[in-house]
Length: 452
Image 1 (cartoon, rainbow, N blue to C red):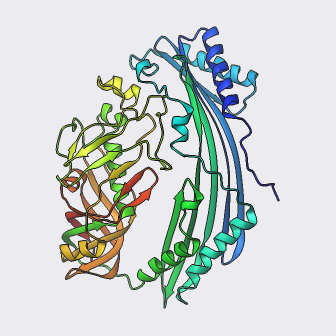
Image 2 (spheres, rainbow, N blue to C red; image 1 turned 180 degrees about the vertical axis):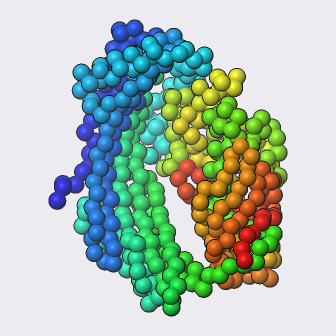
Image 3 (tube, rainbow, N blue to C red; image 1 turned 120 degrees about the vertical axis):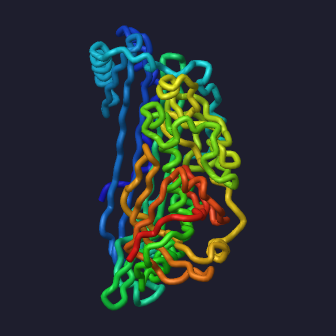
């Protein structure tokens, strides 16, 4: 059995030395500007099914990407070899590509005055790296406890998709010819389980997981297994509902998906290509007035926290949506130049988007809408980002007389994202964290349900 992996093969200072070597060599070879990203990571995944160890997976990856500029001609190359000959060869390859590339007026390094110039202590305060010294036997035992707790809920839990424990650490360094050179280590660990409930000829699935940077923040394995099993059991007896138009509650995990659609629609790539239903939406009312969304990139331990974006531009907290009004976009330097704007420090994506919660529980939201649908599962990718049209398979629970009732399946919910955002009529108090997004359940005033 492979030995436990518990350290990086290179130190941060060693990676920074390699990055500086790449930048220096590119300059000597004629590049007018250059940038590089060097990363490595390692991890382990243990999967248990029906109490028995099923798979053990180890990974150890590393890579370097090099981008060079000849004026506004750009070339890029990559390598998984950290030896100096290989790094020099990557630079030479990138330069060769740049010579045959058409000039692009938006190409180039980020604005120098926007680059992060902080200290290592600023990164340490974000507290993003928490190694989990967990050997295979210990990981297996945690996964078994998680799955056993699910089976203990009742005899109707008849099968399992498996329980998994995942441990991952990674580090990187970014550098460019403007003098920026920085990086840091991160971690991400998780416990997950999926089980199957059966009754007569019907079978329903339920799953749940917990994922954090610090293993001490993970939910107890038994709680994860118990909750996954109860979700599966609650799906038994699912049936269709008649086609109708009713309010729809998106359970918090599914509401996070709606926020992901917002990010896609107001990101630079979609905007400058005019492939978004929210073109020129800055300063406009895109949500109902009760919606406030913050981007907070400096929360300790949070999955989306970072002192600088993928280009090295310093990140800053901001109100993305205030009273339903969009205050800004997600832009890197390239997309910002294409639009005649400045980077928002979002090269690589968003950083901890937080939808401010409401005051009502899920039960209270159901009581408030009277008759409608609680969506707990979405299927398919029926989203048109140009028009905003939204149509997806769904499952959940029917709400009648303000009470969450029987489970529902084999339905489609449809609407338009622009109209759905404006029709958010209530927010729950049950915020959940899903990666770099935090969102409570939310209520859309009216959507079309296609059923029987």
